[in-house]
Image (cartoon, rainbow, N blue to C red; front, side):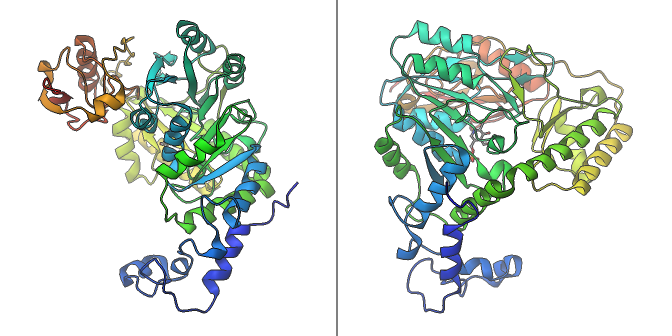
Length: 485
Ligand SMILES: Cc1ncc(COP(=O)(O)O)c(C=O)c1O
């Protein structure tokens, strides 16, 4: 057992930042001396003294020894992994590297259709062939949950040459699928389970949270420490256990997608966040859960509003992260997008608006005063903005068949042209087209554009949803693979 109160990286950085020396190394601002006063007015000067490069005493992100490596070993112990890597380009680069480490050109990977765009980047860079499993969908609330054991099992039975399986756990709304059962299943086939746990970095620190992916048996998990714990934006971690992941190939993959000049501010924030959670994580999470529970109770008493509660049995769901509050505003006759704009004026800013809902993240950084402000803002919203027109009807995802004509990689490298949307039927799509809600890509690069897909996207637009991922979000036009390529 390590002494988890130690912070090897923070200590080394502090020592170097306070040492008296003339700097002839990068970055060019030389310990803040060359920073524009516009920026020092904002941030002071101390922080810039710690913005240092990979000096010998500060180790290197990819070295097998030094203070970064030592900080990663502390993190592995805290998060229950065998190995941990610090990431300075968010979970985005961890997910890309996880796919690169497990799939080559043409290899098949099972993925949920409600994957994050970083997984699509991983498909493009690796050349892997996606085998999509549709997530379970709550048609009343317009919320996608997880893929199920049965869905993964069916895909594994259909294809005998699957290389890896990826799950998103939890979803943006805090819903968790059955990672434990899926891990046991993939391991029966000796296939690694990769988990996009970007929103679940806090799970290991309180028994009232869903089980962490690594504890549940996943081979690899990627967590955005910056999303729910106390690290700086972009600071994430990748954890591995067992022998199904080739560590050398993973390290090489991470080298491909990370900077050779990683920010020590981000790295030190990971070291400090780990120490904080190792030493007082349970206490901090108890308090966070209490804050979330008090917000949940108060908000659900506001007329016309409700807070997402999931109960068993719900397909694609085994546990809910209670620090995620998804508030349904459809009873007010306004969309989540409108409610979001109004709430800003009342001093509460949500994480994610959708057609019927607003999702709020409660974390260790929130205070009782924040919760009071949120509850008050929602009360004002509910009294002042109740509309008389009818509630928006929910948008059910149609079961769109994915017809892959090219792998995402082949589509990415092909010549493209932009056409009016009604001339793209039966052509090969060259971009991601993802409507919110439900946040499930309807088209990804390489898929055939179908009449049903276009009709579905237009329906969502007409109901007030928006389209993301593609160049023309109004969907007048769409980028497709050129006929000549
Ligand atoms: C499900 C999911 N996975 C991965 C990511 C990427 O995480 P990061 O912002 O740390 O790169 C996000 C970001 O929102 C996400 O929602």
